[in-house]
Image (cartoon, rainbow, N blue to C red):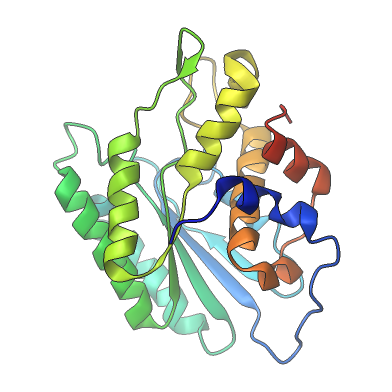
Length: 246
């Protein structure tokens, strides 16, 4: 599914009065699958999980260095599917799927067509396990050339969109959202999110919070009722939506 990026990011600002919590409904559980740009110590995942409230739970199962193939081969994917199967009785389970940074490398052994097929397979397996898959396009790298943010993940972002459309599942365009924000704040400000000097792929603790909030805002923009389970940060959401360094 395609959504207006600005509408998605601005949605939490418009929803001043969050929907009342439905105590009869299952709270959500979010299980995060991805590479180092999702994982602990370098990704957005823990920043997103930290926003959960009112009985919602989350586990960040991102694994640094993985592709859509190696995440399965190493057993990480089976762990995610087991979490869905073991929690679906008490929770409405969502699985975010964000890969591409390593898949696109020439040494990965994963072609773009295979990446797309792998993403489709993952989404279908989540559905079979009783969960709701959410395919995210890849978080942008923060490298600039003459003041313009490099669009070096376009191939895997497009393949992720095609995978979501092919199997009829939700796609949230994190690549577009993060590119828009990083381009707006500029290279010097974007470097303030680097995990280490010169590392314009991975996130430090502050970057984790900012881009975790971005994912939270995209999810609330997709399903506004989930705002009851995601603690608001109006100031940060506004900065992201307006392209102001946070």
